Image (cartoon, rainbow, N blue to C red; front, side, top):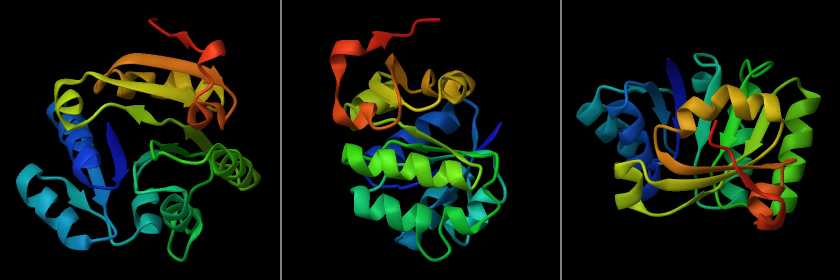
Length: 180
């Protein structure tokens, strides 16, 4: 399985490395391109020229960047994911976003025929390397189910909470652990 991955900061890099160690082939991109090139030399991952280039080569992409503004830039900015062949594809946003941004991103991607999972992760580098993160996912249940196998590669606790925005909102009262 080939997957896109955007954001190779400390946590993103640990998750990306874990995915590769678990047999997932990655195409990566980072705003600081030298980080992507260094990661590719160490792991054999392919480096995309831009987010738009990356989404042209995969059906799903993980995004884990600094904040909502950075996520918006990577998804909707110039040469962002939305500028590529994104129809029918899924953006899995693990950025710590404001929930209103996650709701807007979901709606805007849906308008162009793409899917958005609001999937912030809880934990740090060491748990990521061990596959022990927690993820709280909002968005279409069907897309959550399709991508659950990927979450299982780096998370020990996986919660599906309903609509997009709820993952970022941190609404734990209606969260349920999805063990299946």
